[in-house]
Length: 178
Image 1 (cartoon, rainbow, N blue to C red):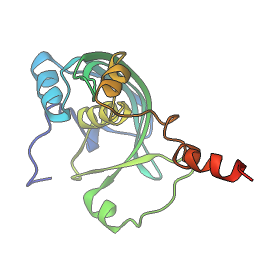
Image 2: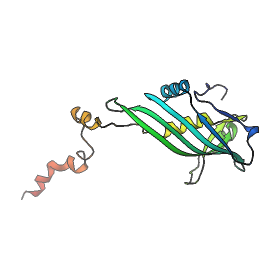
Image 3: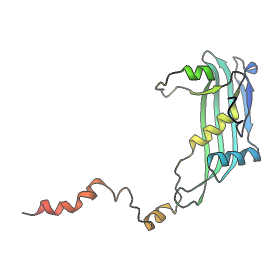
Image 4: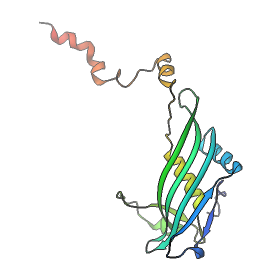
């Protein structure tokens, strides 16, 4: 992490303060942090970002479970109209050292597996975990109520109109002739 810039919403929880018993931690992004996150993730605005975590040490390392909640404004991917979006995501993370993360092989996770995040060995960044959770919960190509009309006006056909049979529809009459 030494060569990487400090995240916009950094809330470091030192490893030496995390024990076997779950400790509740709540974090909230301030106005400056929210504006920087909006710029980073290509959003019109981040109006609210907060998270609650239960953090503890267990056999697999440092585990954080909780919920990330946000209110953001995305731009419609077709019209650029502002689209207010709320995020409410459960989060279950296992923090591993950067060395452990580099040594881990890519494995298929089952539904109960924890997502893995690397840390530098001194502390886990719950703010960055919340920011990434928020970003991953957003639709990468959001469409507003005017998107379909704008696409039609631009000559883009819908999926229903582009069915495979549509491409062969002209041949249908040929086979019906004797």
